[in-house]
Each structure stands twice: as structure tokens, then as C-alpha cells.
Image 1 (cartoon, one colour):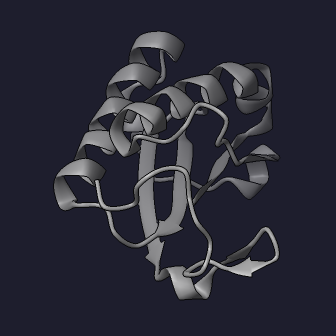
Image 2 (cartoon, one colour; image 1 turned 180 degrees about the vertical axis):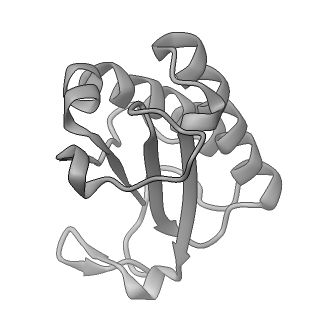
Length: 129
């Protein structure tokens, strides 16, 4: 299980939501081996005054946060981050400097979905990739 939150300035984020979601999902399917039908993305388009970011960034500054069940290898997580940087720049023109990514992990027992505890659900994909 993984959920994705995407933050950005609304004037820049709103027009690219679907395309950015597609790129993120493509990377998740490739790196984390997710099934095509597993997508949980939430967008947080912010007014410019509510998005304070470091110098050297532009209004395209985008933060992508993943929350997922613990179990992926360091190599797999690094692959996900690398794919995201490269494909977002290639397909959307957002430079590396304007992309920040963070992965938060939590044990399966801390999750609840489909009416069950996360450590009791039979998933149709592997966590330990």
C-alpha cells in the first residue's frame, strides 16, 4: 500500500495534475512493482502565499510525499526517486531543483484498509521488492 501527496502552487499544479499523476504512477509501477490499478494520489494546490520555499526554486516547486508500508529495499526506494526526478523533468519540464521527494514508511500493522488491519490483508503485489 502506498499513498501519495503532491503539493505545489495552484497556478502551476492544477494544469498538470493528471499528467503528473500518470508520471508518478508509471514510476511506482516500475520501481515498486505495483499493479496498474493501484493509484492513491492526493493533490494539494496552494495559494502562492501558502507555499514558502527555499531560494533557488521557482513557482514550479513541487513536493511529493509517499506514505507506504515498510518493506522496500533501499535500492528500490532510490530507484523510485531517480525515476521520478528524471521522468518529471523529461515529461513535464520541472527541473530537479524544483522537485522534492520524501518517503515515509510505517509497519503494515499501522494501516487499515478494506475493513482489515494492514498486516492481515492479502495484497496482490509484493512489498519486499
